[in-house]
Amino acid sequence: MADNLIIGCGVVGLTTALELLRRGEGVTLVDAAEHEGMGTSFANGGLLTPSMSDPWNAPGVHRHLFEYLVSSSAALKIRLGALPSLMRWGPQFLLNSRVAPHRTATLANLELATYSLAAMRDLRERFGFAFEASDGGALKFFRTAAAFDAALAITEMIREHGIEARILDRTGAVAIEPCLAPVQGEIAGAIHYPGDASGDAYLFCREAARTIAELGGLFRYGQTVKGIEVRGGCVAGVRLADELVAADRVVVAAGVASPALAAKLGLSLAIKPVKGYSMTYTPDPTGPMPRLPVIDDGYHTAITPLGPRLRVAGTAEFAGHDLRLDPKRIANLGQLVKATYPQIADDAMLTTGKPWAGLRPTAADGRPYVGPGPVAGSWINSGHGHLGWTLAAGSARLLADLMSGVRPELDPAPYSPCR
Ligand SMILES: Cc1cc2nc3c(=O)[nH]c(=O)nc-3n(C[C@H](O)[C@H](O)[C@H](O)COP(=O)(O)OP(=O)(O)OC[C@H]3O[C@@H](n4cnc5c(N)ncnc54)[C@H](O)[C@@H]3O)c2cc1C
Image (cartoon, rainbow, N blue to C red):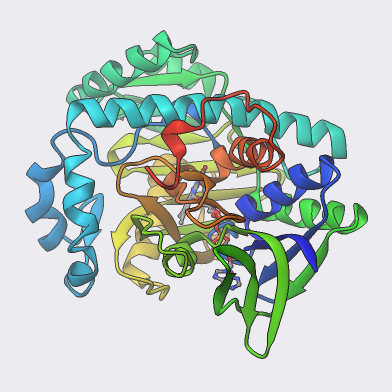
């Protein structure tokens, strides 16, 4: 019998396991993939950014719906085929774009993200994890004065809640990231967030899995959980293809697959997949390399240095669970790196690109679900959307405190799965 069984070996499930092991609990992790980090945690943008705590359903998002449906270059794309699956979630997403709920979600994410970065540093130091981590901050730049002004309002709000943000003109932006010099003339303004960080989520997953095994955690890879077994009103374990694995407590940390598993507990999680892409390049090691992640607000993309590699990530598509790579989206990412860093992105570098697509588990109200489920022994840690890497370590710590009956350092109410 497993004490704690965790479904999912992405950044969320693995950090949850680490936190439970630290508290002296036993853990077994089950994942359908052959090893850790093969889901959405595989090649994300690498950003650990409390500064990006605002959910994507910003006030006024409804005015762009038609564009999202018809335009192939829209920042957010809704595939017609995905529409039926959004019938319930879509209206919730729009309702939560009103000013008050959007602000509530931003502040809840901000608090968890700040807590999470401290928890991540703690894990790094405690276990000596190496994952191309950098604490050098992040830089967001804007190509139009209107976009810059709109961002200043959110920046003011997060500044009031402790996030350091330095407003820069184009010269200031290039001083922070000299590799932006060729596009200096296109920059209307920029914001530097010195407290942000970055790192490779997949390398982290590998380091975390190795440490979990050293601490006595058990892995069951290549096993799909078909359902959660409930007996006498309590969780009894999980069903695999031809086996029942008994467990006192089950944590659902299965990314975009979480709603289907939670439904078996009578819990409706308003999570939908939002598809994104990344390309990872290996530039000439003797040439220039950016110092820090740069977020291009106009294209909703980030270009992040990860040790010797450079990753560009972005795009948001409602396309159901379809993980196919759209060559046009991939080509756009390459063009964007070339347009931002022409001195780095020469033809030789562009041929090194490794394409990837992943599904962000996005909650309609923009906040993750972290806490107890409706059935005794059921626990949820999912729905972190575009912030899963940023929020993972803090969500894990919060959940492990709740599971061990320890008073958490954060108020868990905003993240309650039964909200
Ligand atoms: C293009 C892109 C860029 C991103 N950039 C950033 C970023 O810069 N910063 C940031 O903070 N976040 C970013 N994100 C979001 C972040 O990557 C995700 O929120 C995070 O990886 C989710 O982690 P997870 O552990 O919840 O899910 P996953 O990593 O998907 O892990 C879930 C695991 O559950 C397993 N599983 C599912 N169902 C079952 C089942 N029935 N039985 C057994 N196993 C199962 C899967 O195999 C998978 O391994 C980005 C996402 C994308 C797509």
